[in-house]
Length: 235
Image (cartoon, rainbow, N blue to C red; front, side, top):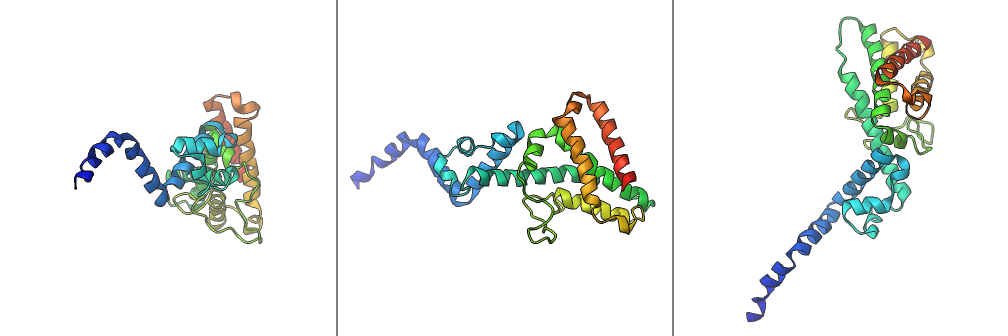
C-alpha cells in the first residue's frame, strides 16, 4: 500500500505534459486529427494558395509530430486534394449566399435570370475575397464536373455547399432554371455551362492575377455585372 502513496505527487509534478499528450492521442483515435490537419491546410491555402499547403507545417500547426499525419494523409498531394475539396465547398457556399438573396416573385423569367447572376456574382466575389482558396480550388487538373466514365459526377459532400451541390452543379441548376422559365431555348442548353464558366472564370483570373487587379472594388463590381449581362445575352 505504501508504494502507491508517492504516485499522485509524481503525476502532479508532470501534469503539464500529461495534460497535453492524452488529448492528442484521444483526438487521433476519434478522427479529429484529420480534421485538425485539414483545417490547418485550409488556413495555409487561405494565406498563400496551393503552394503554401505543406504537410510538415500542417502537422506543426495541429501540434503533432510529422509522422502522425501519414495515417490520414499519405502525402502532401493527399492533403492538397482534401484542401482543394474544402475550397470548392467554400466557393459553393459563397455562391449559395448570393442565391439566398433572391426573392421569388410572379416573374419566373426574372427569378431565373437572377439565379444565373447570383452564382456568377458569388463566384467573382469569392475569387477576390478568398484569393488563396480560389487558386487552390482549381490547382489540380482534375474534373469537378464529370466522372472518368463520362457520367455526371455525384454530389461530393467534401466539395459541396449546404445544398449538396458543388459550384459546377450550382451553375448547371441556374442554367436549367433559365430553360424552365423559357429564357434559354432548350436547344441551346447543352454546353452552356462551359461557356458561362469560361467567361466568369476568365474575369476572376484577370481580377486577381491579371491587369485588372489594380482596379477598385466599385469598378470591378460594375465590370462583373456587365460581364454577367453579356453571358446571359450570349447564351
